[in-house]
Image (cartoon, rainbow, N blue to C red; front, top):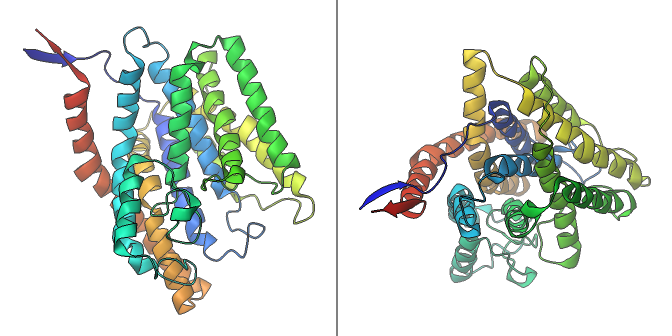
Length: 376
């Protein structure tokens, strides 16, 4: 017997969208480095850097619809799940392993539970982390109540998987009109939380409790399925310099200081609503309609796109380590930020090494093992 591809080969990528995902990932790492020196959510440096997650959700919805909307006659739901697992899960595992290796080096006043966590419990948390199943707060080993305490940002992958399942089970079958209604209601859900909720921002989603699950679903439903709708609408915006313009817009959006202070929370909520509901889809629209003409700019976008997901899902154990070092040694901001620059460089290097020496070979093996159908 020979083996042939199960169905259509991978489609061409939107190079600018890949590049923008990389830009957002680098901004996330920068935000997290600077967050060590932020007093609270009202005094963050690169204040809205956490909105990168919501931008990722818009991108994911757009790309999933582009890749799979016209393939359901050639694949089953299980085929879809296999493809998504092969794309995402290997890096979840390596990010969790890195978190486990560095865990005990992160002991500090910032993470009060680490010192008292036995090895068996940490290894159990690591094993559960491989599956993406969320841990209850009772299994917290850090003190931050994260559903993935070895690698905090994995919470967003948990909601990404939920969105993928909703898409495959039912929402892919929606007409454009019905999808638009669903997206509108999801936008209302998001605005209600942001403008009338207790925080005035979308920070959260990483704990397995009622409040955090509310935040997580508010964050994923509109962006992801808004991205799906955006792809189905088809018409794109074509402008010159799309990558540079969109990158600058992201930097500006993430850097705007907190609005309204501690009293007028609705002002910041309104700003974030505008960013997530209007600006992020607009940026994706412009990015998808743009083209790369320069040799080097194309290479830059491809590189940024390649490292974007590995960087996002592997950098946070290094952030934990940096935060513990700063807290334990009372490092002032100057030397700390210099070390933060080194952390960013190391994070990119770890992401690239993980991609080339682990993720790509593993995914290639998994594709051959699970995505190739036998033909007699």
